[in-house]
Image (cartoon, rainbow over all chains, first blue to last red; front, top):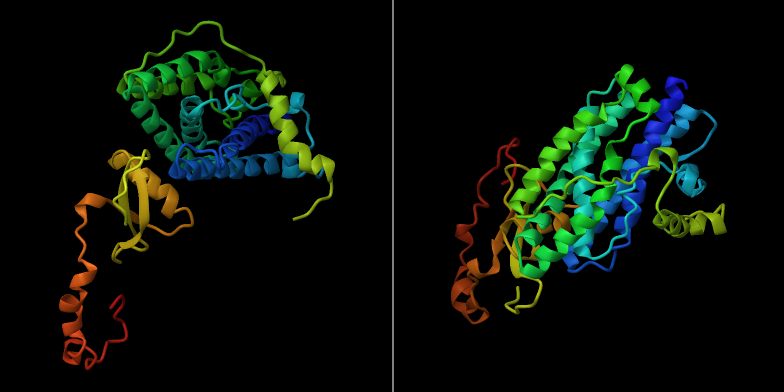
Amino acid sequence: MTTKEALINYCLRIGDTSLILGQRMSEWCSNGPVLEEDIAMTNIALDHIGQARTMLTYAGVLEGKGRTEDDFAYKRNEREFYNSLLSERPNGHFGDTVVRNFLQSAYFYHLYTALSSSKDELIAAHAAKSLKEVTYHLRHSAEWIVRLGDGTDESKNKVQTSINEIWEYTGNLFEMNDVDTLLIKEGIAINQTEIKSKWDKTVDEVLERAKLIRPTDAYMQTGSLKGMHSEYLGHLIAEMQFLPRAYPDAKW
Amino acid sequence: MSNIKDSQGDVWEVFVQSKPGLPHKHAGSVHATDKEMALQNARDMYTRRNEGTCIWVVPLDAIVSSLPEDSGSFFDPSDDKAYRHPTHYVMPDGAKHI
């Protein structure tokens, strides 16, 4: 594997996670629990789609075969996506969404903080720009976790269940393969174990404020580095890709 | 502004400052259950298009408004007092925000 091939894969991991989470968040549009949250979640969806665009465009430039961001988003199949397993989890109820977003945003926050000093200039610039957005995503989701966890008995039980049920998808965030080994050596990527310890701290702090219990690490789902996903991704992609696949040259 | 209570939390009035040094202007209102959420909701609702550099949120209850029936005694007396307007001064070229 060349450095360029590794970097393309690294861009897809980050870009696909943003894209899929953005698509998930867009499903809340017009379905938010209150108007303010509806708009907040749609804003967050757009932030993620914007972040995805930069990474997918860059993957196309690196590849040099003329593929655009749209080609990557709309013309790949399920097994060619490298997004985190966490990002494709269904929205569920509002608490499920908040928990998923919190765990993913805490990861992005520490990832982008570290990647701001990547030796790849575009990755570093993308990280610095995106960091401002994910800092707010983290704040937004963390404040909700605290309010749901330290709210009523019902909200506490629901959000604790959300955390317990999604926990097995968190280990996948920190998996590494030879792409990481190569890019860490080049000073482009960051060692995921470094991010893990910072992520642990952020998660622990917020769960403590929320009076929630952190689940113990047990079996962790795996597969996204090889393009293996849960059954939910195919359905999400089918909806996301319907229009460009049905009308390939549609313009609007 | 409305005093109607519903299930979406209290009403907070939102004031947005568009540039440092300028006054905060009333932008609208949001629902929220506490200060932090009011601030976040205001940020999401009213500064999405680069409108702001600072936000104030104020609980609706904290705002005291004059009443429509007082408008005669409050505002009409200033109708005919042109001398209260500083229109006879020449403004220096460099003066901003006046």
